[in-house]
Image 1 (cartoon, rainbow, N blue to C red):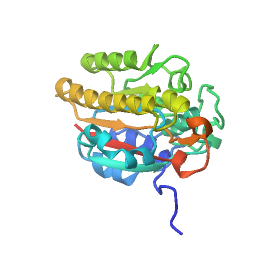
Image 2: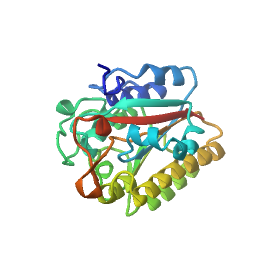
Image 3: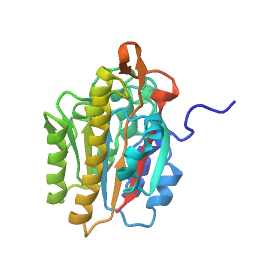
Image 4: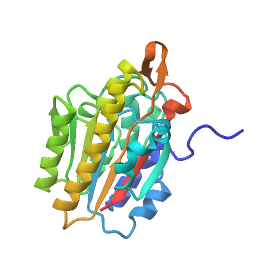
Length: 262
């Protein structure tokens, strides 16, 4: 019987990002993903921009591939990954940016404590680099990596987050920018993963990534940048035409990342 879950794991992202920047990985991080190492090694990368749209499942990409055309045209690598359990936002983003399993970084349910485990942000700060997070208030990425000597830009809406991120690209002073958008996840919970409002939100995410790629090309001409489209977990439909996630099932666990060296 074929394995229903992607063999490559979300735990490898943290070390891969640090490796791209020539920085030692977080203390508890899993080994880097070989494909990303091959993509980035020897490229002189000195910037990383991570766009984090919430809840974009691999099966959504497979079913609505044409919708992702602007993402694929701005990607060198399409990378299916297995998320972690429970497949909910704070658990998964804590894993993405520490490289550690939930039992190590400590978030094992839908709670948003500050992660004390060593993270990509800590690794960059130790190396004298400047990371920042752009997120909407009360969301996981605005809370779980607080208390670091870094900048946080917490705004009210995904559109405001994306506008702030474009401003930061033009300012050109951060080595790592992480931008969180929760609009697809929010709509999906109400109308289901394939509901009209959810698909419109997903289109908005795709357009945002395309816009970031264009801005990086125009403004970071003196840098080599690793750009990522990097969701945390997937989703599935439940009764009442709503959506959910958090289970050990392919729809929730299998996600897809895209990466580009610019």
